[in-house]
Length: 216
Image (cartoon, rainbow, N blue to C red):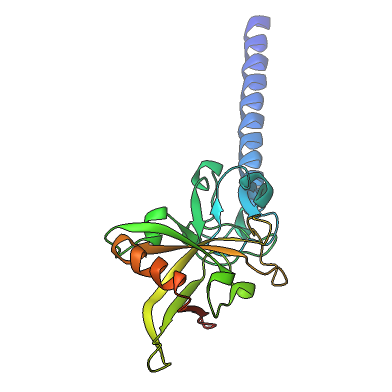
């Protein structure tokens, strides 16, 4: 009789334990579901203003971006989660400090040379041109290059929508921010290889000017 009673009590205790575990599991599940919208995930944001055309590569990458954890519900679609996805990529537009870096604003190097047969890097000093907008040129800009016809005195378009790769100040230091007060001293652009000789010949003759479309 006592043995039966003991087994009954043991079974009752076991059943109570199982029931309690089940209830705990349900409550834990409900808690997780309730907290899911507030879960935090890692994304990469701009640590400072970054101008379009900037190449996100070392050693500047560490200064330009930082990892933060945000509520999952607040993270924009397409946000960059892995730092490796940033290395060597180029910004398609300006990023303000604290903005989340998205895959849609990252370009590969090939995107700059789309449609070009044999792109080469051509550099010139702002002082080499008889007219230039060096003070407002920045990496990522698109410019139009004109040549002066000495006989007519009329400027004629030679190259349109030329990509500005890098901009340096008068001391040769690359301008890496959007500081409009720092004039550009030297500018590197992308040209077709076949156009490079004509470009430098025109520079030597002092016949070129560069303008920027302010709608870019």
